Length: 259
Image 1 (cartoon, rainbow, N blue to C red):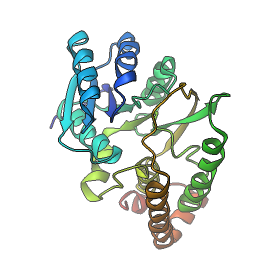
Image 2 (image 1 turned 45 degrees about the vertical axis):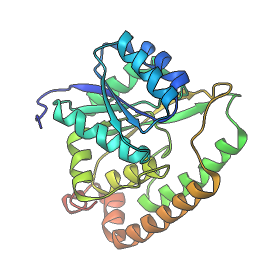
Image 3 (image 1 turned 90 degrees about the vertical axis):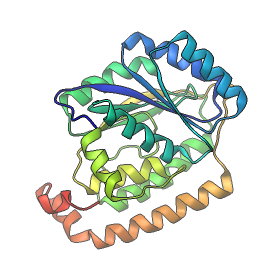
């Protein structure tokens, strides 16, 4: 594993059955001249074929295929490790479904360059295409994240458009097994905050393409999200004195060691 000595970002795309959008996503990202790592989380044959066509058109893409679907969290963590192996300092996570406003990539990179130790979180600005249930339902998770951190620092805990500082992120995943599926985005954000990683929020448009594919399972994933919040609330209670001290007096070195 190489140790980054300068700002050296890459783009990380977890992919699961979004064969209809991956080519367009990668084609748009090519304009920024960044290395791209795609982790295929056991996608179906149609998506594998679309990914092969994408790689044929853009041969500098680095791909990793997981033999079976293991969840977004597993795919992203594998991508972090690949990025670190190549010596990148930051991983800009972009979803493959076409929802993210990719012209904002330079804004995320500028924020990460200005705050290299921070987690840069996308804070969605929804348009009329966003289902009302999605917009309002995410506020429940935001509420619990604010409780779990005793802070409003994380403006949106579910947006998959974010830039991770790899050294701090790797320290976390070496010590802690994170949630593997839909709870991953808020689980890692909360635990990075507990670890002492500062958060910068960046407003960005989120688009729901017509006919878009969602991998969200209403019953299964809501249960996992609920159980993850229960664990995080208990984790907050254990860290309450340190989190309160951080809120009142600023970050402490003791808090940085906890994940």
